[in-house]
Image 1: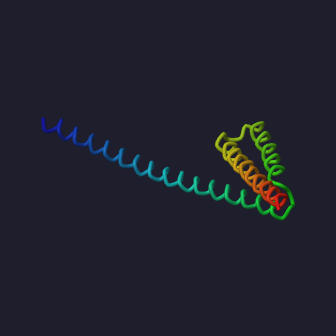
Image 2 (image 1 turned 90 degrees about the vertical axis):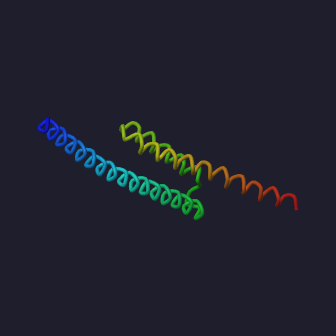
Image 3 (image 1 turned 120 degrees about the horizontal axis):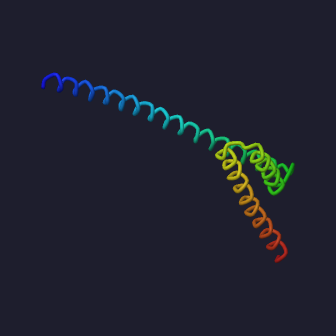
Length: 117
């Protein structure tokens, strides 16, 4: 009886060690995911800022840049790049198109109010 309890105790300790190691690995993976998400957000902000700078400098307009980004997305899909990468590019394209709509609406309002006076 004592021998079976000792064996059971050893097995339970081994299970606890395995679970503890898996928890540490899971925590490390969560931290890595957080870092990757932060990096992805930083890249999105940088690209969006670049597009706005180019637009403000009248190098190109937001709609043209969104079209170029759409072409890049098409190429990325053709190359079977990771779905997450394509989704990130698509979200940037959507953001730019939304900003283009905002900028267009604001400039249209400005020209309308100038016509009214």
